[in-house]
Image (cartoon, rainbow, N blue to C red; front, top):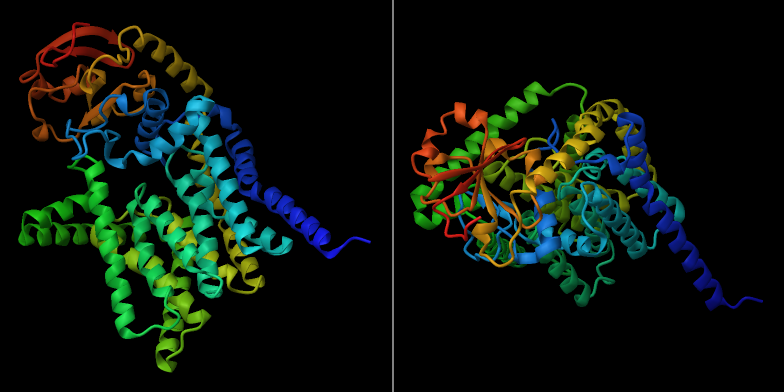
Length: 520
């Protein structure tokens, strides 16, 4: 007869197998959407811009290619040749940690145009499996949560393109499991777990610093019972940590583009300058939000996501008011503090500092985090309602998903491979020279698919505002084309000594004679 310990071990292994199988569900959904909506598969992916994606995708691909091949010895990435305060960090305004993570893995797997989509899938599977294992969900409950994640449409869009978002969604699954334990079972959440979650949030905030805002609800929830003094202390401590992380992130990135960091730098110059920048940003964000809502008030995916956000925030606010009236601090009130700290605080700061219209990027991961905690604390039937609402918005999602078709093009892949072979005859990474000698300078209008043709290790210095350029330029290579010439590139030619290297399919390649680099 089987003893109890062996039976428990077999049950645990069975649960892990079920967890692993269910963890592939969001990825399987993504593959099905690719095959049915776009008639494509993962190997067809090319990180080019579309109506959904921006030129960030070509930048991410290039950063990772560079780090996987040459680490920190590659060329400079960033605006106007502005160095970050920590000059060794030269991975543009997005910071170095994301390229380091994907690039470290790519060192062993290789890095093709589509490799990052496999990395996205692996992280999502690992994140969902961790959530299941941490909460020890029953098979049926795990299936419901897997379906909710699979039908969270922003995740489906961003897991099949090369952005940071898929990685953040995968980390959201792990954080959701840890916060669910903290909210629902505070006695199980011992100090080592609290320290681990705090360090995990700090790590994630160095990739995208909005993660650090979760330190506020974390500190609030660590108290067995709250008081006014403890609440103020927790909020102040969380905001101090947030300020410290944001400041450190600013040391890793070049100035001039990130709106949040620019407002902080304006306050460092003077209070009047800081408040002026903040008020201008707030006015711009509010007007942009109102214009977007009025223009997109129909049957679209954003309306579903706004509805979920309002549902969670309103119910959380009601729960917190109930707690304040009765001086209670139990699970509903703890959950309310979490949602208000996660979504409420973020929404305030987003409108004050930076508004990415829609939930597809900046707000997608926090919304999924609150949605999962919201469902995991409640009965299973509520997940069916969320699933039903998501399925109602399947048609507009499919229409949006179809806009990714330009990113899955065999002809574009072949053109890029041909152009890359041509570029490699004139541009080569040289490990013996400084990073400026492995950098190409170009206008932001040319920061597109042609970046994918550059050899790994070649950085890209781009210009958005010609008035910010400091002469002489330091980059060895320069790239222009007819659109730049017709747009008045005399501003460049008047101050740069150029020598034409070759007229290529990607544009006219020049040698910067002012660069302190060896002869080509």
